[in-house]
Image (cartoon, rainbow, N blue to C red; front, side, top):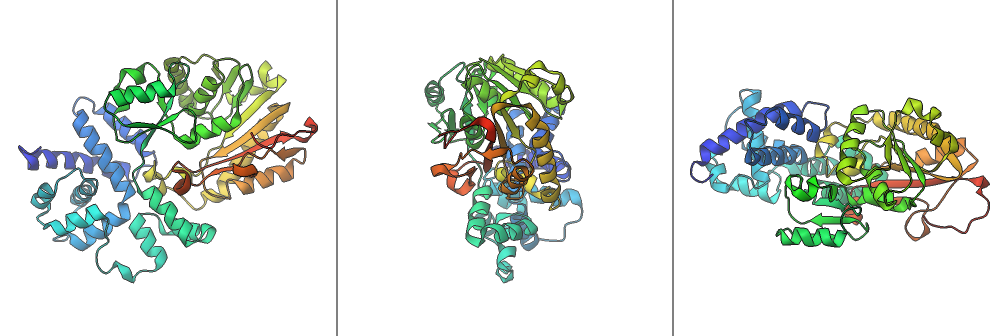
Length: 439
C-alpha cells in the first residue's frame, strides 16, 4: 500500500463506494448483501479488498450520522453527484476505522490532520452543540432520532446513552465450541497456538471470545465443524432451556439453525429436534451446517405439515419460539438494521409473535415447556406479549428463569457485553405441585 498508496486506496474506495450506494438503500441485511456481492465478483475481488470493503461498509453504517456531519463541515467544495458523495463518505468511514493512514488521508482529501484526528477520536464538528440532548445523542452515536426518543422515554437518558454507546462500538467475535467434536478448552488452546487471543465466555459454558478480528471461516477447524459463530446471549437461551438427551424438541422459527445445533450438542445427538421456518432457504442452510457439525438428530420439516407428524401429535417436551422480532438487541452486530427499522413494527410484530405462540401451543406435551425468546430490548415484543398470551391462556403459568429468581431472563447489552435477549418460559397449570424455581 505504501508503494503506491493513491492508486490502491482509490481503487478500493471506488469499489466500496459502488457497494455502499447499493447496500445502503437495499432492504436486505448487509451481511447477506455483501455475501452475494463477493460471490458474484469472486474472480475480481481478492481477500484484501474484501476485508477493506466489508469493514468500511460496517463502519459506515455504525457511524453514519457522525460521518455525514463531518462531511458537511469539512468538504472543500459542493459535491457534484452521488458517486462523488459516496466516495468521500467511504473515505471518511475507512479513515474512522483506521483502514487509511493519516498520510494517505491528507493526500486524498487535501486536508490537514485535524479532520483525521477528529474522526479517530470521535469528536463532533464545532457548532453541533446547539442541538437538543436527543439530537446530540442521535448524531454522536449515529442512531435514528425517533428511536433515541423512544428509548429515552422507555429507559431514561442514562440507560439509553449506555445502550447507544455499547452499540456504537465494534463488537468482538464470539464463537461456540461444538462439543460433539471438541471441548471449549481445547478450542481456546487451538486459537492461542495460532497466535489468536481467545478467552472463555463467562455466562455460556460453550462460548469463546476472540480478541481480534480473524477470518475464522477459512480454517480447517471451521470446515471440520469444530465451532460456529454465535453470540453468547443466543447460547444462553439454549443453556436456559436445559434440554435432556432423548427428549423431543420443536424449534419453531429455526432460521439458519444456530440454536438447533447447540441444543443438539447439549443433547449429545440423542432425541429429536424438529426444525421449521417460514423461509425454506434457511432450512437448506441448516442442513449444511448440521452435516458439517456432525449433528444427526435435527429433522427439518415444513410448517404446514406439522399436524401430520406423529411426533407432533404426541406432544413435544420443549418448544422454542425464537420469534421474528425487531432485532433491537443486536444493533451493535448488525448496524445496518437500525437504519431500516420502522416504528410501525412495534405494533405489527407483537401480533405476529402472539400468532406463532398460539400455533405452537397445541403441540406442547402436558408436562412440556414452551420457551418464548426474542433478541429485542422492547417491552412491546417481550413482557407485553407474554402478558397478552397469559391473559388468553389461563391454563398457563410462567416458570421463573431470570437472575435471582426473576420472572424473565433478560440480557441488557451494556451490562452483559452480549446482544440483548429476552426469554420467558411457560408451562401448563395441570402439571401439579412443583418446587422448581429456575430453569
